[in-house]
Length: 309
Image (cartoon, rainbow, N blue to C red; front, top):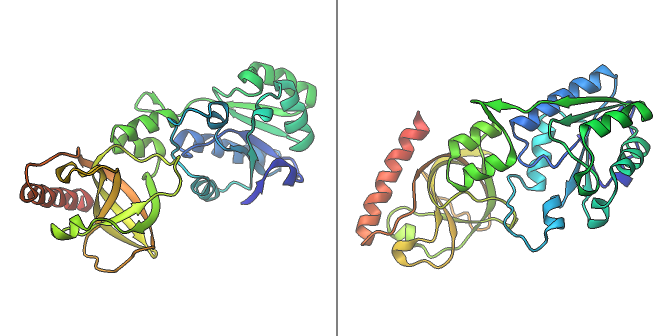
């Protein structure tokens, strides 16, 4: 997959089949669109092109609202799209000026003059241009004017529920890992560097690696205890993770700590990728460290059963 940081660096391909969107998480709904995109490219003897944006439009249009957290970092998104076999990815800077482009200018100047679209594939609820005034109906009118094919993809439905990035975010924010993973089509993960912590876990017999996530926009699931697997130096290990404030010891800062089973290496400064399997329980304040230790031992037993199932 070829990646272009901005549309100016894209110099065209033969008969491009194009789709547009933020593709946060590259979930099953997105994957359906991408499969149709690839089929569309084959039908016109062309190549597949995704036109996406950075930063996320909401972060530009509502700069004082920090509530939006993303399912995938830019690097994660690129990795997911490459695995799906996309030919070309254009990551265009989203600015307030760009957001004010009318839908007719959007089609004429971007899709037609710059991308030279042969076939356009869009999701069922896609809107574009200033104030999201562009719709499928308006695209249909312009497709005949500019001589490109247009195809609309219906929503991907799982258990009678339409899949969307916002629904996956809500699932993760409530700790519902099973639903999130079903909608994603893969296991949700976070990646970060191991930093020094207070050493509480080691003192209790369950040493943990404290993980720092660089990207402040990356969504961290709800506080609690999770069954996870950990990727380190291309090897996979089982483990359990605590996200929260360590209330038993009156912690004041939210931390991410992972206990890696059967692992004794010093890994400060190293990068871990952690895959979420299932939530074990909510974080809880215990009346003593002894009670906490017993609870952690029980968490480990439950985790081993989940990961061995």
